[in-house]
Amino acid sequence: MELCAECGVSVSPRSCGDLFQALLALDHERQAPWGPLHGVSVSCFLFQHPSRLPADGGAMAWALLHAYLEGGLSEVNRLVSRARRGNSHRVKDMPSRVACEAALPQRDAPPPRFSVTIEDVAVDGTFPAEGFTERVRAWAAATVDAWSPPPACERP
Ligand SMILES: [Zn+2]
Image 1 (cartoon, rainbow, N blue to C red):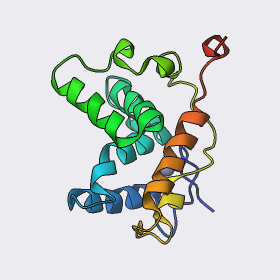
Image 2: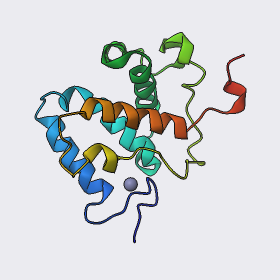
Image 3: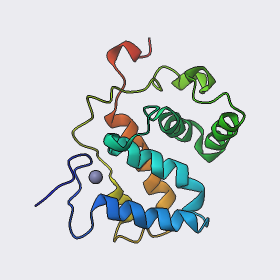
């Protein structure tokens, strides 16, 4: 069985890339529950496929995942509007409690496995609306957990 080298999902019958395209198509309809979670979904996918991370190392995507787990979509929206005003992706703009954990992970040491992948979020490949928000939250948590912070970041 052939597996994605990054997220570990089987490439058949649908690869994780195919599933991601299907999810993007739903996002672009701009309907709930998919549309509002677009940024979170993309961030999860990028951090489960670090070779696709943008040149900034995924700073915005990483910050967005932490914002979502910390305060849900309202926190994400605050982060995005701050970024639009131009003072983006600095750790000091993050909710303070997660600032340390929100330090970008080392991209040369990606986690070998994630407990939740896009395949779990897709269910039967259609990303059903029922339970979608909960599955994306689990996806985000699994992604951040896998890239766990270095010991120096542990809270006192
Ligand atoms: Zn994959």
